[in-house]
Image 1: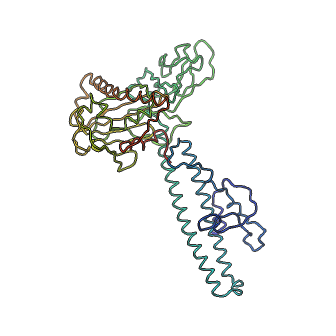
Image 2: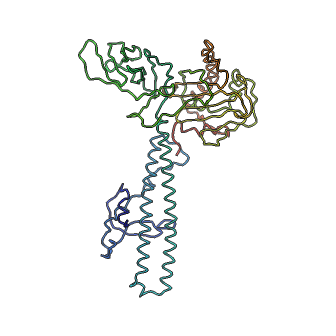
Image 3: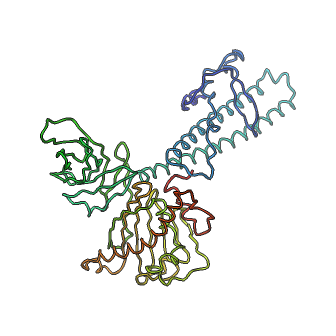
Length: 474
């Protein structure tokens, strides 16, 4: 493949009209070539004629347009913009690498030109070749740096792609709570929705507002797999289409709907423009655990503060003194260790493994000997365990829909005791109320301008690492 053919494969984006082409070595930079333009057409026809491929290299440097981002947290759109700029920079850098090598190749040909050698001494030619050898080595090193940058950019994009489904998909209900003739109204990001089962038994999610007079649909009923408005009886299918209008001629009416899925005993929504192509992540408890309780609560607190609370165990001996942490000793040092990643690890000295899954899920496994009592310093030292799932769905700025699931790897008979779920709910609410009175107080202060992240210490590590529950760290 010729050099020109190879160049034709380079992506051409963000091009500016070509002006005068020239090159400048080490202009304003450290080593290598900083490309400003290209002289000549490569065919010996004079320096005033442009290369036909010259505009490929006349591309604006994208990096100066990126705002300083190090150490800051970005929302998803900002993170995607940064990733896009990274790709543009890699594109620009690759063009400069190719051009540098081309220019050096031309200089080598020029130095070794038989006609030019007749006018130069052997020492001069040797010196020029030595300088070119040094430049070629520098260009070679730059190519390796560019390769590493491209690999890093691709890794970042792959990671963001893997998070894409997790970030947008939301668990909104447990399957057992949605019967064929029931509805579940929810708020998600300050928008009202309602879920119900269609004719095929699959769940659907539509806006909780009738297209006619804006009546809340959840006040109505489910009729043959359609949700019926209680005001004038208009009926909507799970895709939002109005299929029945009593007392009037049929109009073409549709309300908003969201892709809705049922997966492993949970109902998910996808607030995107089209159904996802990836597989929904599994939230099943580990092997050997049996689900004992699934509880849904509506809480008057911002979901980020609730997540921070769930990810913090250092507060337990001081906050949960009447429930699970009753009698816990206060250790001299509490640490959260992250052998796998910044989003998962284990506590020391508590036998608790914990994981945060963006944007709003917390998983934990606790080693226990009997209710409320810890055993050992790690989960591996414990024979029995409690596994917990917390999904903190942001309903509004000051409201969270909490889905809680509790699983045990012991005492399977407890699941079959009548009314046991009532006892579990009572205990869960009691633990949560110990937290809520504090977190609601935090929220009040935060609304009035207080900083809830003052003076971070070592046991805040998981909380700070988990900030991509609200954003993606770049």
